[in-house]
Image 1 (cartoon, helix red, strand yellow):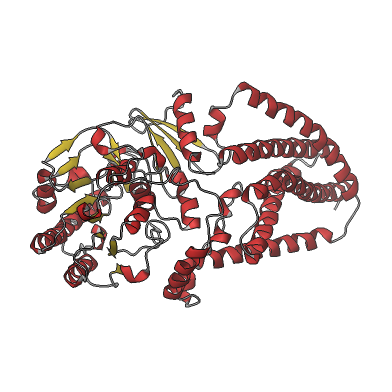
Image 2: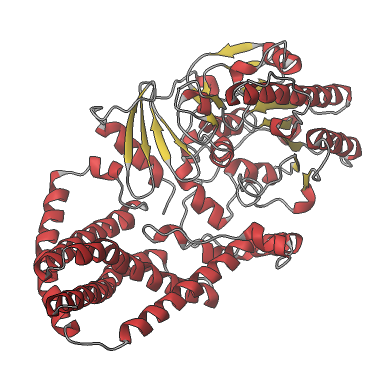
Length: 599
């Protein structure tokens, strides 16, 4: 080996070691700036939550400071091992990250959400000037810091870096371990910290722990309900914005039967495949241009009961805060009983959102195996017959999944493609659910009750068979009309059959029920983003969400935001439209709606 090769290899090692230490030093700077997140969060409610907050905070800022340096400067040091190049890039990267962090803390403290492409679009000139000044000052400081770190690292060959890396790894493992435990037992003082950290995605393993027998789901559920009494929301939410004032007399309140059918597309309801649901639609109120607030069950159901943008889901899940609609029904002494063929946990997570205040005894889940949809129909019928106090109003929830239908009997040609197979199975599935709905409605008609019953049939989201030509079959993959268009049908006591054609959304349902059923005088804006369905107002835009992304959906355009701030601009046909001009007013309205219910 030549002397020049040996020197070159040593230079690479020193540069990589410098990049690591430079990242660690910047992690300390990031943590100092990020202390504002801790001030916004406040003092945790328990000792274990305090330990978690410290561990998560330290580990996250260590990652934010170290990983970008390692991932960018490491390859550069190997390919082009020149000190001036590596250190110059490091100073630029660190200055940019630190300036963005300062900007993010300002945005979060004021608006309660983190920096994204959408927030950038509505920045005023003064914000850009401020950011530019911060970057210039920080860049000069980072240049001096880079030189000093090099002087400290150059010529050293100790193992302090190894032990520090090991310590930070243990800190990360400790924080993630506490979060896994906190999420598994629904301990909100721990889980509530998640949204305060930028780019923070903690590990969850609730189902895995239950499968291993390390937690008892029934015991966890009982303990969770007991803790909800003593655990406040930490002052994070202002929801509703004002106490409800509702005037409807208790004796005039109807029973409410809510039938939710997973992924039921309104254009697939027909006398041929779903005769009973089609009849129900013709004889009642049907909303023919109705959209979900999500392309997934989690966000679709969240928008249906809360009437809020999907960006609030994580907070309400962490705090286990039920919707105002459910809280008000509990206050009006409604008996609640839920029956699900798919359960209440992942992926919908309605056990810690919609039904967070409802005990497990009032939530029935069909056992695995057999016809799970038919099972919950029978369970509901038995519950209805066995109700003790017939004078007490009830809210009953039935959750059917057409996917639980066995498609073994579906005969297709061997050459049938995937779309054809999935479509045939889907249609057979909704036909099977229609038969269950027929049995439910027949039982309801035969059952004598002193109260009338409001019946709602809805779907959480739509279902696509690659109509957009993007290769998408199912849901949760895009925000086009096939995955967002949803079913909403009602049999409203005393109302004549009517078809509504305005653009309506799931966000409109909570306000409609609270105003029309319970006589609440508050404007719907006090607790939701929607309006009263009977006002015939078409939305100009709605917020829709999936499991990680969100979108602002307008009639002629869609703006999709992904984790990390990436934004995709699409036209009405879901084609890329980078030339699309973003409407600053719409963005400002969306941003305002995303922060309105935070304190």
